[in-house]
Image 1: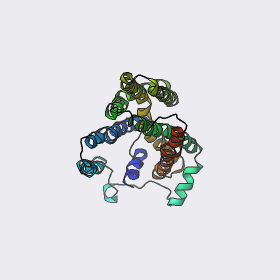
Image 2: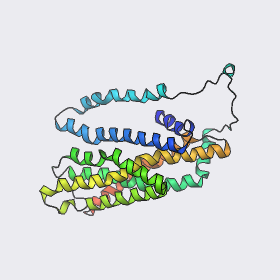
Image 3: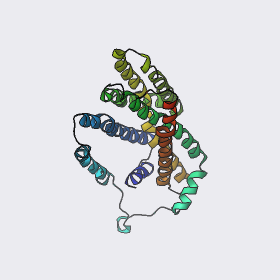
Image 4: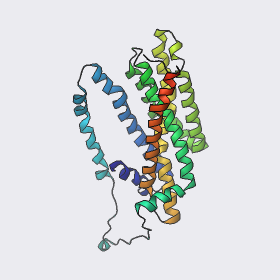
Length: 272
Protein backbone atom coordinates (compact mmCIF):
# COMPACT_ATOMS: atom_id res chain seq x y z
CA UNK A 1 0.00 0.00 0.00
CA UNK A 2 2.87 2.33 0.77
CA UNK A 3 4.47 1.76 -2.62
CA UNK A 4 1.16 2.09 -4.48
CA UNK A 5 0.68 5.50 -2.92
CA UNK A 6 4.18 6.46 -3.99
CA UNK A 7 3.71 5.18 -7.55
CA UNK A 8 0.45 7.11 -7.84
CA UNK A 9 2.36 10.36 -7.45
CA UNK A 10 4.11 9.68 -10.77
CA UNK A 11 0.95 10.76 -12.61
CA UNK A 12 0.07 13.64 -10.28
CA UNK A 13 3.22 15.58 -9.40
CA UNK A 14 4.89 15.37 -12.83
CA UNK A 15 3.86 17.90 -15.46
CA UNK A 16 5.66 16.64 -18.58
CA UNK A 17 7.02 13.49 -20.19
CA UNK A 18 10.65 14.50 -19.74
CA UNK A 19 10.34 14.73 -15.96
CA UNK A 20 8.38 11.46 -15.90
CA UNK A 21 11.21 9.67 -17.73
CA UNK A 22 13.79 11.25 -15.41
CA UNK A 23 11.92 10.16 -12.28
CA UNK A 24 11.34 6.66 -13.66
CA UNK A 25 15.00 6.24 -14.54
CA UNK A 26 16.05 7.46 -11.11
CA UNK A 27 13.70 4.93 -9.52
CA UNK A 28 15.14 2.27 -11.83
CA UNK A 29 18.65 2.95 -10.57
CA UNK A 30 17.36 2.61 -7.00
CA UNK A 31 15.78 -0.69 -8.02
CA UNK A 32 19.18 -1.84 -9.26
CA UNK A 33 20.63 -1.11 -5.82
CA UNK A 34 18.09 -3.22 -3.95
CA UNK A 35 18.25 -6.02 -6.51
CA UNK A 36 22.02 -6.03 -6.14
CA UNK A 37 21.68 -6.20 -2.37
CA UNK A 38 19.22 -9.08 -2.64
CA UNK A 39 20.88 -11.17 -5.32
CA UNK A 40 24.57 -10.31 -4.84
CA UNK A 41 25.40 -8.96 -1.39
CA UNK A 42 23.06 -11.13 0.70
CA UNK A 43 24.54 -14.37 -0.71
CA UNK A 44 27.99 -13.06 0.24
CA UNK A 45 26.92 -12.73 3.89
CA UNK A 46 25.30 -16.17 3.82
CA UNK A 47 28.41 -17.75 2.28
CA UNK A 48 30.45 -16.22 5.10
CA UNK A 49 28.33 -18.11 7.61
CA UNK A 50 26.26 -15.15 8.79
CA UNK A 51 22.85 -16.24 10.01
CA UNK A 52 20.04 -15.16 7.67
CA UNK A 53 18.24 -13.48 10.57
CA UNK A 54 21.32 -11.39 11.25
CA UNK A 55 21.47 -10.47 7.57
CA UNK A 56 17.83 -9.36 7.73
CA UNK A 57 18.58 -7.17 10.76
CA UNK A 58 21.58 -5.65 8.97
CA UNK A 59 19.41 -4.53 6.07
CA UNK A 60 16.37 -3.60 8.16
CA UNK A 61 17.33 0.10 8.52
CA UNK A 62 16.96 0.45 4.75
CA UNK A 63 13.20 0.27 5.30
CA UNK A 64 13.43 3.83 6.65
CA UNK A 65 14.14 5.05 3.11
CA UNK A 66 10.40 4.59 2.46
CA UNK A 67 9.71 7.80 4.40
CA UNK A 68 11.94 9.94 2.14
CA UNK A 69 8.99 10.98 -0.13
CA UNK A 70 7.27 12.46 2.93
CA UNK A 71 9.99 15.10 3.06
CA UNK A 72 10.55 15.61 -0.68
CA UNK A 73 7.04 15.64 -2.16
CA UNK A 74 5.46 19.03 -1.59
CA UNK A 75 1.93 20.13 -2.46
CA UNK A 76 0.25 23.49 -2.61
CA UNK A 77 -1.85 24.47 0.35
CA UNK A 78 -5.49 23.36 0.08
CA UNK A 79 -6.75 25.96 2.54
CA UNK A 80 -9.21 28.48 1.07
CA UNK A 81 -7.50 31.21 3.08
CA UNK A 82 -4.37 30.63 0.98
CA UNK A 83 -6.28 31.21 -2.23
CA UNK A 84 -6.81 27.56 -3.15
CA UNK A 85 -9.53 26.94 -5.72
CA UNK A 86 -10.47 23.24 -5.90
CA UNK A 87 -10.40 21.72 -9.37
CA UNK A 88 -13.36 19.86 -10.74
CA UNK A 89 -12.71 16.18 -10.27
CA UNK A 90 -14.81 13.06 -10.67
CA UNK A 91 -14.83 10.87 -7.59
CA UNK A 92 -14.94 7.10 -8.08
CA UNK A 93 -14.82 4.18 -5.65
CA UNK A 94 -12.41 1.27 -5.78
CA UNK A 95 -14.68 -0.94 -7.89
CA UNK A 96 -15.33 1.83 -10.44
CA UNK A 97 -11.62 2.56 -10.62
CA UNK A 98 -10.92 -1.14 -11.24
CA UNK A 99 -13.47 -1.30 -14.06
CA UNK A 100 -12.09 1.92 -15.54
CA UNK A 101 -8.58 0.51 -15.73
CA UNK A 102 -9.78 -2.50 -17.75
CA UNK A 103 -11.74 -0.28 -20.12
CA UNK A 104 -8.49 1.35 -21.20
CA UNK A 105 -7.47 -0.62 -24.30
CA UNK A 106 -3.90 0.71 -24.23
CA UNK A 107 -3.53 -0.43 -20.64
CA UNK A 108 -4.75 -3.94 -21.50
CA UNK A 109 -2.19 -4.15 -24.33
CA UNK A 110 0.48 -2.98 -21.92
CA UNK A 111 -0.47 -5.67 -19.38
CA UNK A 112 0.08 -8.34 -22.01
CA UNK A 113 3.50 -6.92 -22.89
CA UNK A 114 4.35 -6.60 -19.21
CA UNK A 115 3.43 -10.22 -18.47
CA UNK A 116 5.66 -11.59 -21.22
CA UNK A 117 8.48 -9.22 -20.27
CA UNK A 118 8.28 -10.14 -16.60
CA UNK A 119 8.30 -13.87 -17.40
CA UNK A 120 11.59 -13.36 -19.22
CA UNK A 121 13.12 -11.32 -16.42
CA UNK A 122 12.10 -13.70 -13.64
CA UNK A 123 13.16 -16.70 -15.69
CA UNK A 124 16.56 -15.08 -16.10
CA UNK A 125 16.94 -14.44 -12.36
CA UNK A 126 15.57 -17.83 -11.25
CA UNK A 127 17.21 -19.81 -14.04
CA UNK A 128 20.75 -18.58 -13.51
CA UNK A 129 20.37 -19.07 -9.77
CA UNK A 130 19.27 -22.69 -10.35
CA UNK A 131 22.08 -23.41 -12.78
CA UNK A 132 25.04 -21.57 -11.33
CA UNK A 133 24.30 -22.62 -7.76
CA UNK A 134 25.25 -26.16 -8.81
CA UNK A 135 28.43 -25.23 -10.70
CA UNK A 136 30.43 -23.63 -7.91
CA UNK A 137 30.60 -20.31 -9.75
CA UNK A 138 30.41 -17.08 -7.78
CA UNK A 139 26.89 -15.73 -8.21
CA UNK A 140 28.02 -12.33 -6.92
CA UNK A 141 30.09 -11.70 -10.05
CA UNK A 142 27.33 -12.89 -12.35
CA UNK A 143 24.62 -10.76 -10.75
CA UNK A 144 26.95 -7.76 -10.56
CA UNK A 145 27.65 -8.05 -14.29
CA UNK A 146 23.90 -7.98 -14.97
CA UNK A 147 23.01 -5.07 -12.67
CA UNK A 148 26.09 -2.86 -12.33
CA UNK A 149 26.05 -1.55 -15.94
CA UNK A 150 22.37 -0.57 -15.78
CA UNK A 151 22.90 3.16 -15.03
CA UNK A 152 25.03 3.35 -18.19
CA UNK A 153 22.73 1.20 -20.31
CA UNK A 154 19.84 3.48 -19.29
CA UNK A 155 21.73 6.38 -20.87
CA UNK A 156 21.80 4.53 -24.17
CA UNK A 157 18.15 3.57 -23.76
CA UNK A 158 17.20 7.21 -23.15
CA UNK A 159 19.15 8.22 -26.24
CA UNK A 160 17.05 5.87 -28.35
CA UNK A 161 13.87 7.19 -26.68
CA UNK A 162 14.79 10.75 -27.68
CA UNK A 163 15.90 9.89 -31.21
CA UNK A 164 13.60 7.01 -32.21
CA UNK A 165 10.75 7.01 -29.68
CA UNK A 166 9.85 4.70 -26.82
CA UNK A 167 8.50 1.92 -29.05
CA UNK A 168 11.80 1.52 -30.89
CA UNK A 169 13.80 1.82 -27.67
CA UNK A 170 11.78 -0.87 -25.93
CA UNK A 171 11.96 -3.18 -28.95
CA UNK A 172 15.73 -2.74 -28.93
CA UNK A 173 15.83 -3.57 -25.20
CA UNK A 174 13.72 -6.71 -25.67
CA UNK A 175 15.91 -7.86 -28.57
CA UNK A 176 19.17 -7.37 -26.65
CA UNK A 177 17.77 -9.10 -23.57
CA UNK A 178 16.63 -12.05 -25.70
CA UNK A 179 20.10 -12.36 -27.24
CA UNK A 180 21.66 -12.48 -23.78
CA UNK A 181 19.14 -15.08 -22.60
CA UNK A 182 19.77 -17.35 -25.61
CA UNK A 183 23.54 -17.02 -25.22
CA UNK A 184 23.23 -18.10 -21.57
CA UNK A 185 22.05 -21.57 -22.68
CA UNK A 186 25.53 -22.23 -24.08
CA UNK A 187 27.14 -22.06 -20.62
CA UNK A 188 26.82 -25.80 -19.80
CA UNK A 189 28.72 -26.70 -22.97
CA UNK A 190 31.78 -24.54 -22.26
CA UNK A 191 35.01 -25.52 -20.47
CA UNK A 192 34.87 -24.77 -16.76
CA UNK A 193 37.47 -21.99 -16.99
CA UNK A 194 35.46 -20.13 -19.62
CA UNK A 195 32.09 -20.55 -17.97
CA UNK A 196 32.29 -17.64 -15.51
CA UNK A 197 33.68 -15.03 -17.98
CA UNK A 198 31.11 -16.08 -20.56
CA UNK A 199 28.27 -15.90 -18.01
CA UNK A 200 29.41 -12.42 -16.99
CA UNK A 201 29.43 -11.37 -20.65
CA UNK A 202 25.84 -12.62 -20.99
CA UNK A 203 24.95 -10.67 -17.84
CA UNK A 204 26.34 -7.46 -19.32
CA UNK A 205 24.35 -8.00 -22.53
CA UNK A 206 21.10 -8.62 -20.65
CA UNK A 207 21.69 -5.48 -18.57
CA UNK A 208 20.81 -3.43 -21.65
CA UNK A 209 17.30 -4.85 -21.39
CA UNK A 210 16.94 -5.09 -17.61
CA UNK A 211 17.43 -1.35 -17.15
CA UNK A 212 14.62 -0.50 -19.54
CA UNK A 213 12.35 -3.09 -17.87
CA UNK A 214 12.68 -1.26 -14.58
CA UNK A 215 12.04 2.10 -16.23
CA UNK A 216 8.97 1.37 -18.39
CA UNK A 217 7.00 -0.20 -15.53
CA UNK A 218 6.83 3.30 -14.02
CA UNK A 219 6.64 5.44 -17.16
CA UNK A 220 3.83 3.71 -19.05
CA UNK A 221 1.20 3.25 -16.27
CA UNK A 222 1.74 6.79 -15.01
CA UNK A 223 1.47 8.16 -18.55
CA UNK A 224 -1.73 6.20 -19.21
CA UNK A 225 -3.18 7.37 -15.89
CA UNK A 226 -2.24 10.96 -16.68
CA UNK A 227 -3.91 10.74 -20.09
CA UNK A 228 -7.04 9.25 -18.49
CA UNK A 229 -7.12 12.03 -15.93
CA UNK A 230 -6.86 14.68 -18.64
CA UNK A 231 -9.56 12.99 -20.71
CA UNK A 232 -12.15 12.12 -18.07
CA UNK A 233 -11.14 13.99 -14.94
CA UNK A 234 -10.68 10.69 -13.08
CA UNK A 235 -7.32 9.93 -11.49
CA UNK A 236 -6.96 6.16 -11.16
CA UNK A 237 -3.18 5.94 -11.11
CA UNK A 238 -3.10 3.87 -7.91
CA UNK A 239 -5.40 1.28 -9.48
CA UNK A 240 -3.29 1.14 -12.63
CA UNK A 241 -0.23 0.26 -10.56
CA UNK A 242 -2.23 -2.16 -8.39
CA UNK A 243 -3.49 -4.11 -11.42
CA UNK A 244 -0.01 -4.01 -12.93
CA UNK A 245 1.40 -5.43 -9.68
CA UNK A 246 -1.02 -8.35 -9.84
CA UNK A 247 0.04 -9.18 -13.39
CA UNK A 248 3.71 -8.90 -12.42
CA UNK A 249 3.21 -11.28 -9.49
CA UNK A 250 1.32 -13.85 -11.61
CA UNK A 251 3.95 -13.71 -14.36
CA UNK A 252 6.78 -14.03 -11.84
CA UNK A 253 5.09 -17.00 -10.17
CA UNK A 254 4.58 -18.72 -13.52
CA UNK A 255 8.19 -18.13 -14.59
CA UNK A 256 9.82 -19.23 -11.33
CA UNK A 257 7.36 -22.11 -10.82
CA UNK A 258 5.76 -24.20 -13.60
CA UNK A 259 7.90 -22.84 -16.45
CA UNK A 260 11.20 -23.26 -14.60
CA UNK A 261 10.24 -26.80 -13.53
CA UNK A 262 9.33 -27.63 -17.13
CA UNK A 263 12.70 -26.38 -18.41
CA UNK A 264 14.58 -28.37 -15.77
CA UNK A 265 12.63 -31.56 -16.44
CA UNK A 266 13.41 -31.33 -20.15
CA UNK A 267 17.11 -30.70 -19.60
CA UNK A 268 17.15 -27.09 -20.78
CA UNK A 269 18.49 -26.00 -17.38
CA UNK A 270 20.99 -28.38 -15.86
CA UNK A 271 20.98 -28.87 -12.13
CA UNK A 272 21.84 -31.49 -9.55
